[in-house]
Image (cartoon, rainbow, N blue to C red; front, side, top):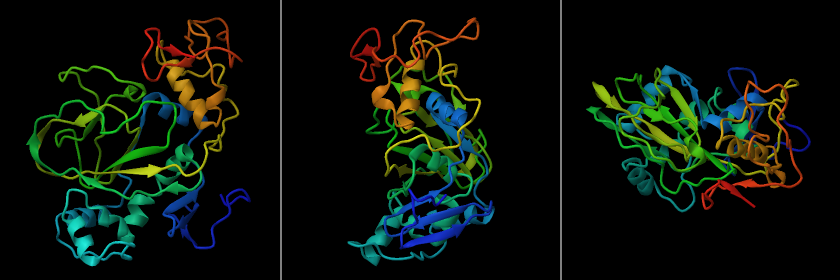
Length: 325
């Protein structure tokens, strides 16, 4: 992990996770580094689908403590008072719908923000020196409730860049009956219409489930039929270093033949993957049946692999054919 290119800062803290892989936390700059855990295929899967799910990742004791904290049943014990804030300000923040003071609790940092099942995926997608969240949104719901309307979060942006990702944390058991978040895979690449009657993929799971997704993905709170409190914390992790292909490379992964998606999709997914590899500026496609599109019924690879000239995907949707110069 701690290569010469990414030395541990002098004020960094070394943390030994339960899976024996080291993690370095720079508390002063609110960043961490660790070994990436996603492979080429898994990074491409995220580019194509826009989400990953880690079911039951957080220990039960931490889940109970989180629920107690959100419901005011335990005292706050912040590790410090950030510059520009006071104890009174921290208490006001805790009582709001954005209880970001939970990020100052050591137990939450260790087991949730730096969760051993999550950090390697974050490092794979956001590069070295991942920026920790500074704002939490608490979506507390007294169930049962109808489903929300499909929506993308405020200030979402469509493009190949991945400067941040969003995480949902469910500290209680959240079966489908309790209305977990519902996602539309692949909807992060551009605007689209969806009937409220059409379903999606549920981020359901036992207590401690963490969902990692592209902030532009279409989603909603699912319909709940059971009774009970449904807590969900939402927050973002940030990129602080340029993109490069430094995740777990696969010897058998070939972008010439990899599946990037269907017509009108593959070019966007491939552009995002190439941006994550640090080659976004060089990406072009010839259009039509050319690379990066392919089908399993071809008898040979697609023409036009990594052309020197061609078109960019039209992320702004300004042209009817979906291409831009």
